[in-house]
Every structure is written in structure tokens, then in C-alpha cells.
Length: 98
Image (cartoon, rainbow, N blue to C red; front, side, top):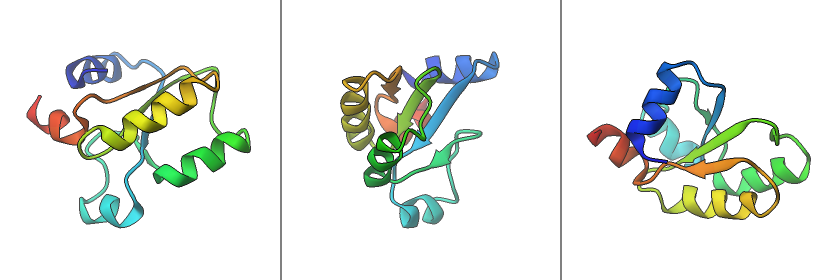
């Protein structure tokens, strides 16, 4: 998903769960996520939460990271497990540039 598309969807109030998959120290060093309502769940823990059934399968999920590579991996893997999921193309770097 392009940053402008995610911004539009969030501004319209669409029900999207945003997962920031950066490690906790990266998340905190950056002052949290610039995306309102984003939840920090580091990449490795996302898969654990999915296995435990703690991620919604009935809601759009968008994964984010700094450059878009980690969040793309997470989205690809969870899409294969039946999640309605996309990644933020270009990550937070692209979010800030948009």
C-alpha cells in the first residue's frame, strides 16, 4: 500500500490495524510511530501472535517498518496464512516523504 493511500484510508476512519514491526528499541528511539494508532509488535513476535490467534483475520492489517523490507516479509508470510494484510511500500521513510 502506498503511503498516500494509507493516509487517506486512516483519515476517512477506515478500520485498519497498523503494525509497526520494528524492534522495540528502534520504535522507542524514533519516538514511537508517526502513524496514529500503530501498535509496535516486533517482526518475530508478529508470527507468535498470529500462531496464538491474537491477530484479526476479519480486519485489514498494514505492516510498517523503516524502509519497507521487513514489513513486506511479514505481510507476505501472513497473507499466505489467510490474513487481509498489506505492507507500507517504502516504509516510514516513504511515509515521511509523502
